[in-house]
Image (cartoon, rainbow, N blue to C red; front, side, top):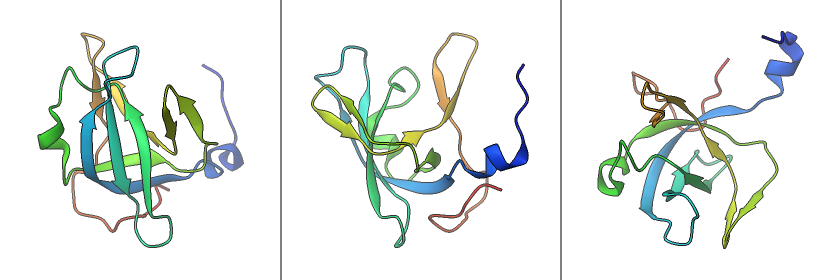
Length: 112
């Protein structure tokens, strides 16, 4: 495992957001959803493609708090311009489980 310095970690903007919309990303090559994530007044709502279809249905995602990286450059994924990266962990089956706070925190709060 490569080690990094604190300054490297501090440059990554990991923020809390709330999923406000989730729909099937029909044009994606691998099964995915298009998420709209509200990161609060300072950052706003950002779109993301998330390959989380094995463990989640779109309707159960609405209102869920998630941790996302908001300072990566935008990335074109098919017809979607992804504006953030929603984080998660691979389970023993290789499916992605979302990284979520276990208590309520303000939208836009930075992981630190």
